[in-house]
Structures are given as C-alpha cells and as structure tokens.
Image 1 (cartoon, rainbow, N blue to C red):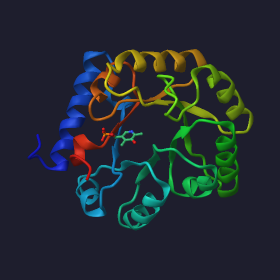
Image 2: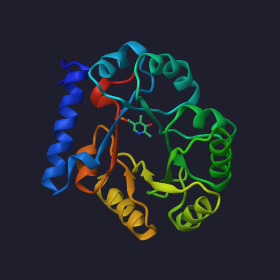
Image 3: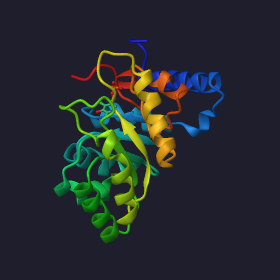
Image 4: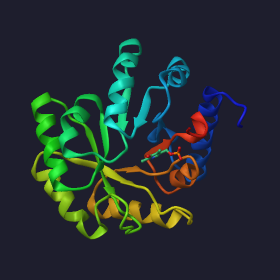
Length: 222
Ligand SMILES: *Cc1c(COP(=O)(O)O)cnc(C)c1O
C-alpha cells in the first residue's frame, strides 16, 4: 500500500468503508469520507480533486485559508470540514471558509460561530466535540456537560448535527466509539464524526457517518 498513489489509496479506503458498512448492515452512502489534507501542499491534494473527490478536512484556519480559496476557484463543489480546535476570534474566518465545524466544545465558541453564521448568511454543519476519554490535556466538551451545551446551541440558533471524538491513544477505540454513538442517541443528534486512518473501519461498524482519514490517503505527514 505504501507504493500506491493517493488516488489508489482513496479507492482502497472507499472499498474498506463499503465492506465495513455492508458487514454491519449499513448503507455505505450514509458515510462521508473526509480526506484530511492538513500539512499537505496543494500539489498533493490536486490528484484527489482530479479524481472527483470533493470532501476535505483541515485542522487550522490559517493553513486552510492559504490553500483552499485558489483550489476552490478551479474545482467546484468542494466541501471543507474544520476538524481542529477553534478559537472564538477565528470563528468569522472559519465560517467563511468551512462548510462544517467538528470542534464546537463550549458555549462562547458556539456563540461566536452563530453570530458569524448570521452575519454571513451561512449555515455550517456543527458537531460538538466530546472529550470521550475524559483526558485533561484534550479539547472537547465533558460528557457531563454535553446535554447542556447541545440545548444551548439550539437556543442560540446553531443546531447541533452530530458529535465528534478523538479516542485516547494506544487503547482499543471501539468502546469510545460505542459511547459516542450512545450519547448521540440519547441526545437526539444523528451524525457521528469518528474514525481516523488506524480505526475508520471499526468506526463505520459502530455507526460513524463521517470518517476523517489523512495518513492512509496521503502517507505519513512530514
Ligand atoms: C489529523 C487528524 C485526523 C487524521 O488523522 P490520520 O491518522 O492521519 O488519518 C483526523 N481527525 C483529526 C481531528 C485530526 O487532527
């Protein structure tokens, strides 16, 4: 696989998603493959765009602003997802560029996004990032605070579409994916952003609607 091109790896990832979906009685059409292009230069991204892929993710607003406006002029229908931490003072820029934000984790940020969305007439798809392993060094809303944050987002006109998580490193991720799926059910949200290169197949069998895959497409980041 290491000798394969990014386009071949994209086909492999799509096939793996289809297989995991069918093995768990799901329709692969419910699952969005987000190609995480952080740190990748435009030249690395172009082959995937030429092959017809349109859904990409970045983790930094500034890096995305430097790369994507030019690509979006050449390729229509690009859908950009922000998967990294967001500071409230960058909400305006994030809303202008991104179609989805996976890292809503506090009311002050939700308020900044809602205000920017209203000013710009945009409706970003919003995910609440959950600190699913209760890790102090990690971002994300605490599990105990989730119900309140989802309700508050609804109150300020920023409906929550789904939940996102990054399970703790080095342990079996399945129980964390299952907990995120259970929390989504409990709180009445439908989308689940979970699964990265190492574990996206597992995430699909547990209900992921959005998988975030970087290394498995582009190779190791520099
Ligand atoms: C970098 C990143 C990914 C992709 O990770 P890979 O292991 O390269 O697939 C997914 N989600 C988030 C939030 C990331 O920062």
